[in-house]
Image (cartoon, rainbow, N blue to C red; front, top):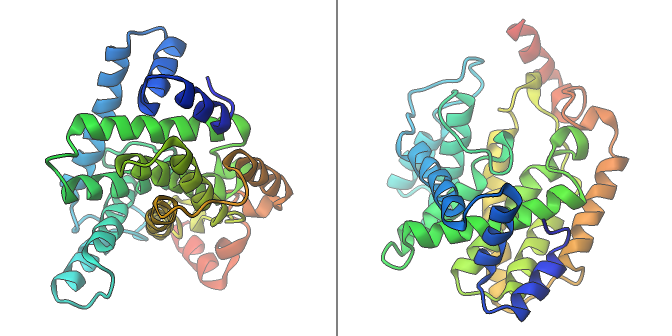
Length: 289
C-alpha cells in the first residue's frame, strides 16, 4: 500500500512494469488474490460505469425533486448548436451529469472515489474511449482505472476522501486528481506527467467546501461533478504540454489535509453552512420535512 506518489513514481522508474501493473500487483497482494482476479474485478467496475451512462433516463427525478433531467437538457442544447464548448468537453459534461444524476435517482453507480464525486472519473475516461475506441479497449481503460485508483489510494492514506472530514475538496478534488492522472496515462504520459496532472487538478480545487442542500448528495454536488471533470481534462492538457506543478503532488495532498482540518464544521457535510445555509436552501429543506 503506497503512502506517497513520489514512491510510486520511483518504483515505476526502476521497474520494467508499467505504472498500472505496479498498482495492480500491490492491490492484489494487499487483498491476497491473484493479479488476474484483481484485474477482472477492476474491469467489472469500469463496465458498471459504462452501464450507468448507457442506462441514463432523462425522465427520472430524484425522490427529493431536486435533481434529474439536466444531462438531457445539456444534450438537447448541444444538438441545437447552443453550446460553445467543443465536442469532447460537451461529452465530459454530459456524462458527469448522467452518472451523478443516476446516483441521486438510486440507480447503479460506482463510487469513484465517493458517491458524491461518482461522475468525474467515468465522464473523463468513457468520453476518451469513445474518442478513440480502437486503441482504447476496455482492458486499456481498466489499466487507466488502476492509475486513478492508485492516486486515490495515496490521497486516502495521506489525507481523506471524505467530505465530512475534509470538505468537498476531498471528494470532488480527489476525483478530479484521479481522473486527470488516468487521462494523462491514456495519452501516453510518463508517471511524472501523470502525477503532475493530479497535482494541478487537486490544487485547483483546494478549499472547496461540502455544503449539501437539505443534507442530500444532489445540490450542489451534481454540478460540481461537471467542474471536477472539466478541471481534470485541462489539468491533463497542461501536464502533457510539459507544464509542471511547482508544488509536488504529495505536498498538495498534505495541503488539502491541512485545509480540511482548518475548515469550520459547518462546511464539512453538516448541511449547516455555505449554500446549505442560504435562504433558498432553508426553504427547500423546510419543504422536504
